[in-house]
Image: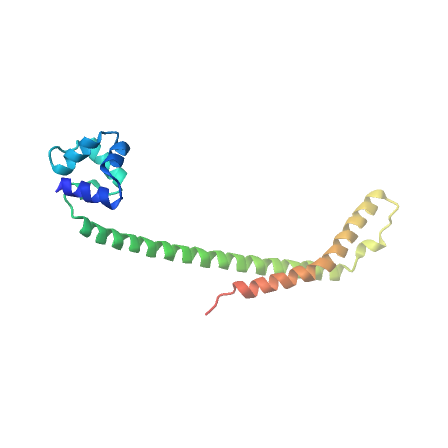
Amino acid sequence: MLKENIKSARKSKNLSQEELAIKLNVVRQTISKWEQGLSVPDSEMLISISETLDIPVSTLLGETVSESEVDDLKAISEKLEIINLQLSQRKHARRKVIHWLLISLCTTIVLIFLILLFLNSFYLNWNYDNPEYAVLGVVLHSFEWLFIRVAPIILIGIIIGIVLTRKRS
């Protein structure tokens, strides 16, 4: 059984006896003796063979390859199904977080706009003889000027983002 399994696994990997021997650091004749059943590899060499040929040691020792392949395919498909489900859940969670961040940002922009509207440029009545007031007044005026011009564009982009990330039925 071992001899057939080594030979079929080697051939399924399209390796010659020489190529397998090089990978295992043995001579070609050793591979030939294993495949003819004249000798058997020790436990360490069995592990090396299984790693090189990408098959479990149990398959080398007698478990039929076809049953193993069916079980492996079933296990792989189950793992892929779990991975797909996890990716879908992560994508949904990420979309939900982005959606609520956009809503929060939209609310913040509207609140800042209302505050600026309510305060009605109060800094314009300050006495600008004091240099600290002058600097603070320029900073506030610059912020207000920039915000009033840029906020509507950002708000439109955020609203589009909210619509695109909403939960679809």
